[in-house]
Image 1 (cartoon, rainbow, N blue to C red):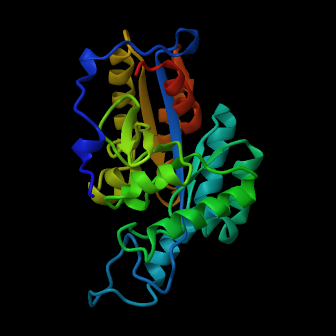
Image 2: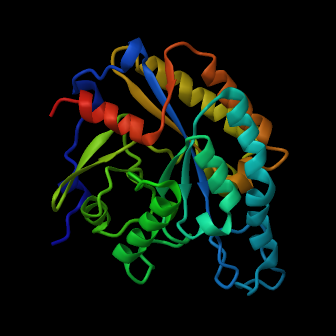
Image 3: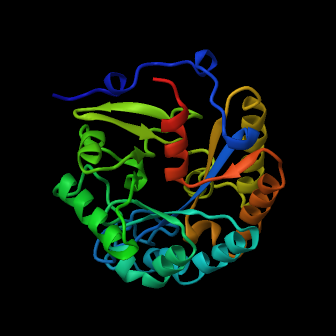
Length: 292
């Protein structure tokens, strides 16, 4: 039986909920998600920066494949310096196949204690993979084999899900998902066997939306992130909130954009009452704190 979104999650106005309190009197938890993907040059590119002169979907699509590849070869390492300088532990949302293809990236994240979360085995719409459960299992194994423990969180490629995704994730041992971008606090989704938590993610403070879809100038990332932060910080005066920042190495790792990512993080890190946390840390705090 298909479970509709409203079946999984009843409407809940944030103003009517019991207060959530973070440790140490903090008011806002911030997590930064770095998406590392593998694009198969034999398939249509998931996103494009340059359309071919004659239109269509050329194969191979060297300009767009190379545009993405730059992020993993160069952009990621620029971003890593920012995280290291600010001593921020990020979350790596990674395709299962990308762990082997871009092993130095996975190694750098593992050495720094970043959390790894599943992001599909390849960068493909979850509605189009041949077998969704098999894709999730393969991704889980790839991360577990490399990191030494199973991933607890999942982000669908492009936030895509089927009607069964939350059920399969819960059945395969996942604790949280990020696809349901509908709240500033974690929420609990019903599944066929129990529940799974959704951690607040973002489509607004997401470089794909800003740079590739809305075509803003690079500084929009900093401006929007700071504006989002200031409002959420104000909102959290009586009950904690969660803020996500989303980046892709081929976008915010580009030379002309990196400074704006850095400046946004510097602004946020300078404020008292802010905790940089991983998804699993937010999950465990919420499960331990929230009232049924």
